[in-house]
Length: 102
Image 1 (spheres, rainbow, N blue to C red):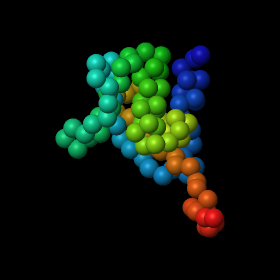
Image 2: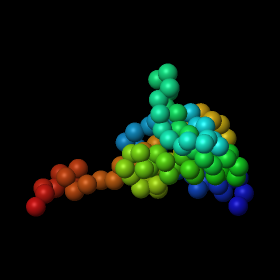
Image 3: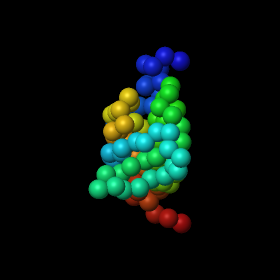
Image 4: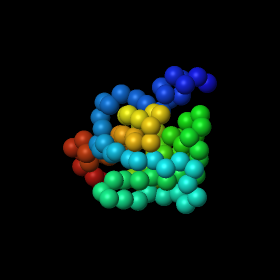
């Protein structure tokens, strides 16, 4: 898989975005997790920054933290940088479309 194909897989257009978050990624960390340091969101992942492994780990970690499916998180900016911007797409619920619950 080429770099262009990997980038196309990780990113997608911003059609309906519920939240945009900026993250500083620390690949190759011993203790993975999400924290806030001096007002910046820091995401530590075990995977190294080789062939997009850290980017994929970031998508999975953010999806778990926000309670959405991994395909609901997309990388907007920062494919090859430690400073990244992600979009969170939350699924529509029936009540979000004006339908009544039964």
